[in-house]
Image 1: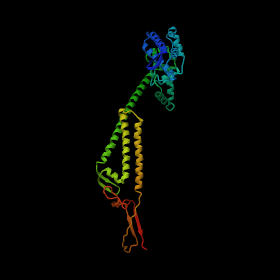
Image 2: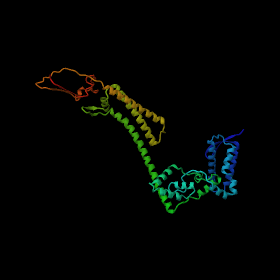
Image 3: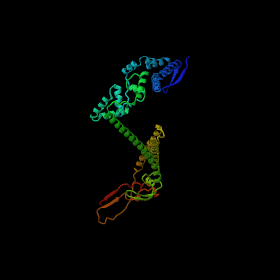
Image 4: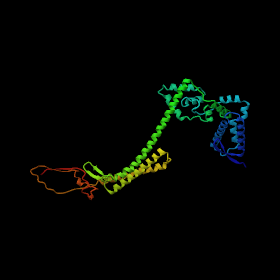
Length: 399
């Protein structure tokens, strides 16, 4: 029976058994004792523990639940023993630099001229960064491909921030020796890999790029706040406008008639006759206003305050309200179209003297506004006076 421990290695939690814990603890103690005389020994040990955590994390992703002694031995074999460095340190460092791995592409912030793209590519190929910059300069004359490619790589390539990432960028084997050498080389300061003119030009371009980036982020922030304020103002205007539509009275001019001292709500009732159609229209408007204003308030607060958190359920509810408003509005339009399709007949007998004239012209126009049904007048709606919507012209010739 073995005991299991939960240990924190490089900021990550692992379950490890008793034997593996004792072996790893002894290994780290010997490394601390060995690097105690080095400048920056704390950073070296932090990088070593982080690399050990990365190796154990890879094994954990392969299905390993508890770290056993076998896995610790594999990690130690990969990282190396401090005795190997003390026996032949110079040769081991040269040998490690000659061994290349697949590595990864990163942007090199230590040797950058603008964004570190060229320096990172040069570190991966093991060449001088000047040649990569010349290649980008040549591509500049091919319809500006060099600039476009540089910007794309600048956006997608990560920055080599940790010691392990810098070694991966250089395609070096990661062990205690290379980690130690990399920490020492970074401590010596930034290296200028190009000419003085190129370095000065790159520094100026980097300044312009960072300034443009700050201005762009400021512009985005202003646009975000302005958009949020506009959404909130528009949502408030919907409710204020609907409220004023029932309060403010003003003259209303139609095509062939004019009304004095009515509200917009009364005018709406004038154009949408019938209680059934009106209620459907009112429900559609309510669903629209609640759905649109709710979404605008949610997005406005999110843009201005970054609160509340985005939840698709909330947006789905507002979207369903708007969709329901469309469906109900369609039903109201269908009901309205059928309510005015009813035809009426008007018949009567009238005698007119001809007075020796051969023709009589009878005309009826929709200008006869007294035949319209007015919901504001209180008159009853009848089949006879609801549908005077066209012009009738008759010519009668005596026999």
